[in-house]
Amino acid sequence: MKPFPQRRYGLARNEGGEPGKGTPPRSLVLALVLACASLMVLDQSGSVLDPARRAVGEVVGPAQSFTAGAVRPFVELPEWFEDKDQMRGELASLEAENDQLRSQVRTTDLDRNRLAEFEGLTAAATDLGTALVPARVIGIGASQSFSATVTIDAGSSSGITPDLTVLNNDGLVGRVLRVTSTTATVLLVVDPDSAVGARVAADMELGFLTGRGDLGDEARLDLELVDQTVVPRERDVVVTWGSRNGDSPYLAGIPVGEVVSVYNSVRETSQRAVIDPFVDFAALDLVGVAVPSGTRSDRAVVEADGSLR
Amino acid sequence: MTGLSSVRVAFVALAAAVALVLQTTVFPHLAWHGVGPNVVLLVVVAAGLARGAHFGMVLGFGAGLLLDLAPPADHAAGRWALALLVVGHVAGRVRQDAPAGVGGALAAVAACSFLGSSLFTLTGLLLDPGAGVPDLLEVVLAGVVWDLVLAAFVVPVVMRGLTRLDPAALAT
Figure 1 (cartoon, rainbow over the protein chains, first blue to last red):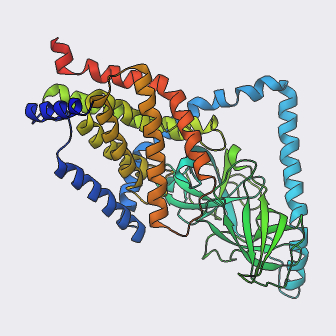
Figure 2 (cartoon, each protein chain N blue to C red):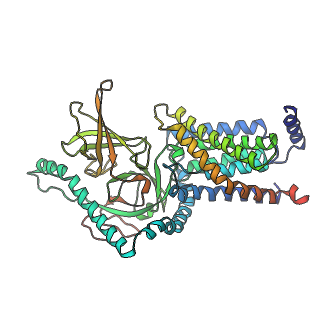
Figure 3 (cartoon, chains in turn brown, blue):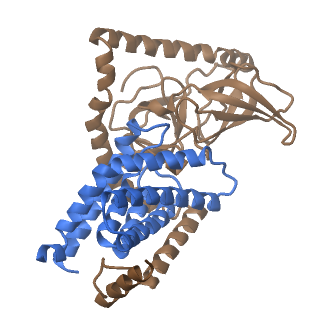
């Protein structure tokens, strides 16, 4: 068996010179492997490759947008067959209303605590001073990459910049990593690299949420509380801690998920709670990007008071 | 470079680009637990099988780089480039070692898919040793199954396209 391939290699080398034939020269193998290694080191150590990513995104983004638009009717086809037409419209509006009410209920604790804290100040600052740019998810990274990122069809021309908060009906989705003119890449909160400052709405305790990299039904987040004496209860709602003036990513008070179980880690001297996120990351479609109120955008923007601009 | 070989390069570049768009846009809707087929890897395997290790390796590097840089990728660039470079090389060697056939091609796809995903995971662990990877083997194996299913459609198309554009095949 052995000599046969050996002879073939010899032949291939004798034919030599023609690109695309036979085994590659050792120098080329070495050069390409070294190129890969240096790319990894470069990209790991800084943002040197961001222009390259942006350039590729500018080209690939419109193609993704177009394809996503083309397959959307087929993706939604099964739903269309399941329900009768009028009922679907009714159901969708009821669901939206339900989600809205539910998210109000989830944050009541937080609002009550906040109101108490801010009593005496001029206003309870109900307006966060933000508007929402609506966008659709057009590309999803595969689980094989072990990172949870998606592409949305709104970019810098819609007023989107890196580090903005992305949310939907149900709660926090993630934050913008980088933008091209027509698309933006969003890091989902379930990504292992994602860390979100959070507070338990019921008792205002602070902590940090990290993702596990799972999407779908078993998507979970880990909450590590700063104060180790506090034990969160099950079904407690967790919202973002965030910053009021928006100098760090994530707005304050966006519902993230609820506590499903609590672990007490003696070794790490901290409480670790497992959070079930409200957002269904496997079926992510319409999202909103929170932009400062009055941002110039090439599409309709939902303003803080609910009006469309 | 002859005119024909630049046509061939254009063909695989187009195939890789189409595969990338399909992989990020269409297949996530069909994905099982977020695991979908790696269409770009299939194009690289097919090119390696049709044209040999040299061609497969260079294409693997280019296509991998595209996969690394195109949104929504966020991992360190060069990881898929390295994985697909090896995949292209291995697929090319398979072409020389074993007679081409449906069974041989499928075995090559399965082996290359496993190899590619594993290499990608390993470089990730090397770069970021602290990162916990959930259900590693499950994800890789599910990817292999997906790739086998899709190979039936992708590999023959790419291989036939490359053979049509092969000057040697045209001469005979």
